[in-house]
Length: 419
Picture 1 (cartoon, rainbow, N blue to C red):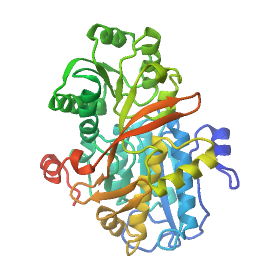
Picture 2 (picture 1 turned 90 degrees about the vertical axis):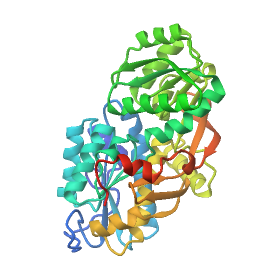
Picture 3 (picture 1 turned 135 degrees about the vertical axis):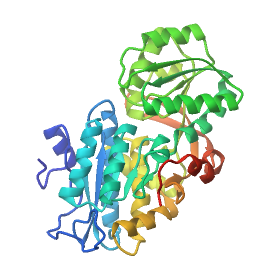
Picture 4 (picture 1 turned 30 degrees about the horizontal axis):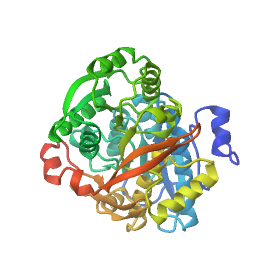
């Protein structure tokens, strides 16, 4: 139970789940009178619901996600709200389970009357929540997974994918890996739908860059024993490793690789600081770790540096990838909503799908053809680390049009419609 007057951290400490978080004031109104169905809890409040990791294999991301969400809601209320309305945020824990994520999204719609849903989830969870948003006519913005199937097979007119696709990341990273480290690559990825996309897209782009996959391995999500894979890497002796785990599996592999004496460079498909830091800062003294990323605190914009300074001041740490993704993707949706002519679901959808502007990281566009966000990518290297913090160095900025699949390419394979 969340009691008024407790901070988010108090609630998390008391319950261990953070099941509901009201991040702004309350309203006694019910119904927003827009007549368009979907959410809308009150005509003087704009309600945003977030379904995100707080427990399970990705629980290490939770502090960054929740702190960024709380800061974003506070920032919008300090600026006068959305269309002059106070913004209220609600948060639910998916418990890393698709069924739970679906239930929590439906609760946010039914009980809280949210005008908009946002997610920070795995592929399987996201697909379910997108369906909930579509069935209920509530705009839904995903902030974490870049699985192609969410656009190709599971899209609907109310869903928007803010993260770049697995193919976009692979295009950004594969050529760099071949140029930096060599042509022979070992692939190690999680054995579920998104992991298979990662493997396929990286193998394709590695070969396009002149490289060769010498061997590959699979492990279940949340795996803790990588001894077989470490042995296979030693036998293959590749120039570098393409690595697709993001949660506790990343810690387990990096720790085991270091203990075995493997210092082969690693190119992580996604690198969340709390998890890779769990392997110990000494890993980065011995192993070069790169990632094609959409956000890092090192992005040089005035808005980002202001965000970084405030985040560090309030939390005592630099914002990681999860914080930046949660803040800027929901920020883009709120900016679109603020410029809309109302808060009805169809009005919001029209505003989001045509929005183009600036967020903390700079230029940001939502493509109407496939509801995919477009923005620059970055190649970042772990410059150094201590016991509490990863320090990044941005090595390259890649324009979106160099790595993002064209509208014709995407819509040609879509089995669903965003119209």
